[in-house]
Image (tube, rainbow, N blue to C red):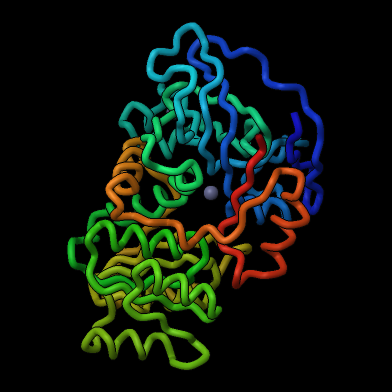
Length: 345
Ligand SMILES: [Zn+2]
Ligand SMILES: [Zn+2]
């Protein structure tokens, strides 16, 4: 099968790899329908290994995907051949301290499809049955490939301190920022303010439910947010960029006692001013994972129509174009290129 195989920074090769062998035990062989290129895939392409473990010389990337079940191991009872599924990339040990408390995203022996195991930028991949969530017939498989990033931000909206009707500032309208806009809306938050300077991203943020998009070239974002909130700041802020100045803004734009969710990853350690959090007793929480049940909840929101990720899908490609028209396009055109979906089959 053709696969996009990562060998190092700027070195993703389209290679013919052997098809995976027949699955055994609880493993399931799936044929990939659509797989999105994630921001972290782009980081691996430009500067990896970051999430790829240092001892891995090559791995097929791709962890945001929908698929069809084509073969099952002898202990599989939760899915059947032909099922359309979304795959949770986490393959957890089910034995460690965190797994026993159902905090699977913190599993100490976590394996990840697309980082530590071959992923979905290939026709076939293997998952264990507890990684699969069935996708109802009314949801397009393209949307299935967006369940993973939507689950990341849905997890953020379920943190203690995020309440119905609460206002939120979302900094950055890339794929995660836009997922945050959509899930904040679907989760019943109140006013949604977005900080973004690129015009097409700003337009998509509005289409997905942002009440106000602030362009930092036109207005001073902190002053604008304070003005929009009676001088207080928003109850929740979510940083989806991963830069020092936007992290500072996320802390400052939260109201006293508010919650700051950090979803962006910085490329190097940063000098964020934490006094703003200490002074006003703001809570800062990292936000990257999800619980398994959150995939199902996102799928229900998609099925009900309360979550519509269609405006985020800007490009669809065949696998053989993934480097030239996928990764390279994401580097070249950050504004118009949000979510690139790749079809390997
Ligand atoms: Zn991702
Ligand atoms: Zn574990």
